[in-house]
Length: 129
Image (cartoon, rainbow, N blue to C red; front, side, top):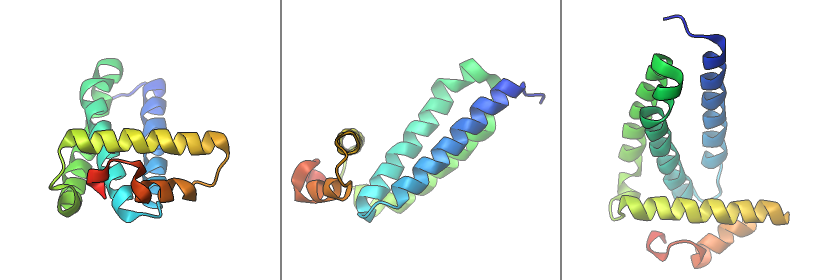
C-alpha cells in the first residue's frame, strides 16, 4: 500500500502523541487513577480510528486500529478488578472530570500533586474511591 507522505505524517504524529500521553498517564502518582485514564484513552483512541480517521486517511489507518483493538482488550483485562463495578459512563465521566481538574491545575500554575490530593479527598466521582 502506497501511503501519501501527509497521511503517513498525520498517523505517525498521532501515534507518537498517544504514546507520550500513555507514558504521562502511567507515571501518575495514583496507579488506580492512571489505569482508569489509560482505559479511557485506549477506548477513545480505538473509537477515533474506527469511526473518524478511516474516512479522512483511508486504509492506512487499519494497522493503528488493529493495535488499538489489541491494546483495548489488554487494558480491559488488566483493569477488570478495578473497573468491574463501574459502568462505562462512570469511567468516562471520571476521566473528563480528572482532565478538567488537571487542566485547571496546569493553567493556575499549581503543583499537579494537589490534583491527586483533590481526587483522593473526593474531588472526582466518589464511586471510584
